[in-house]
View (cartoon, rainbow, N blue to C red):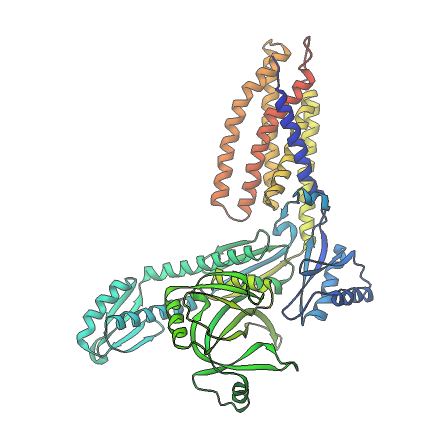
Length: 625
């Protein structure tokens, strides 16, 4: 007997309504926009709004709207005017603002209230920037060798072995000892403390000592670790800074590919990728009039250096301060960093936790210098490209500012707070960059490409056209070949596609060209399932079974075969998702979701529709199949 439980109809209705609701935002196209964000010391206010509107009006560019959204000013435009508006505003505002092309949502507020949002689009559909970064492996090796040299100094000092010299050379570390009788002891303790080093005693008249070099196996591991650490840090930094679904992956032995969908401004993207910010804690040697005099005369203590406060005098002049060259603690020695608001002053800051060695140095310094000033230096490094004599010169812009200068009120070590930041947003970004850590090795931009939204729109149109064409052909074929059951199959296929889009929107999946291919493939798998069901029903009719029994038996017999076929495809999709990267993951995700939705619609929903049509007809002579 052909039956379908009422609760299943309720579930199917809920699924249909929910799918329609959460798939609906994808019908609202994004607006092309120019996003204007204030740099430090500048603000997004009514004056900027009026200035931008005036510039656009004078240039004959009609903006849909100019309004503040969040911390930025968004200028919504027609896609044809986006690039022209960005080129107009960028040079006029470059001193205090970052001007970037972007795409912004047009989804109505009532859909936002339900948490409904469109699918994110990948780089190939939405546009964005593509970078190829070259990692400086030589710098990574020098950094590790310096670390080993410091480790050797510490071990010799702890073991009370006097040394004359510990020098890092291009290929090894030279260690000279004061006494020849200490050589064997030094070699044995260092071999235990740093087993990855190859130790070779000095020969002849070179005196007592040895050379230390990194073993080949350890060197290969170091270079691999450097690339992987840079990839990990970049992923954490970009994800936390809010770039949707970036792709950061290793390419070859020394390169990293970074793709940022939706970002059209290379300067903004480079700031996200290459900028590093850190803190240094230094003793203040000269302040106030003494520092001003030292700056004027040039007579700076040999152990000191002139820095400048972030705050300026009322006349705009900079405030000098002389700080010790020796660093008490630095950002690369941080274990944790979180943004906070100081309860006493209400100013934003960062709560810092140092590692054990830096905590001990901080404890020793504060114990001996209570009441004396200590400064916090904010250091930011941003990659930049300059044109010199017609040639592109790549470098790094370094900004050093003293954000806090205060007397030490008590003894502290590992845990303390740093205040003096301009805004909560700056505190959050600094905490993020401190947590993500410094890159294991410096990088330079070997290649950069901008993919415009127009190319993405063309890709979307072609992809949707191919899916729509294949879908329409399938629907027409089913209606002609299976008649009424072709209509039932078409209903199941349409609901499958609706569910697939809704689920990908709900989970925030990124749709790319491979993802579109995965959707097309799942439509094909869903077709296969419906063909199996329809052919099973026809076999039962040819075997002389009654129409109602043929429908029930056809669905029951086909369900097992459909489950087996889809489970194997599902396992393949899971393997692709787990082991794949980038476009492969996008294809696998749409495939996995499509398989799950097609199994439900092909087996359950289509049977429910067939039961609605034929279930109450007891004297059914035949089927339109």
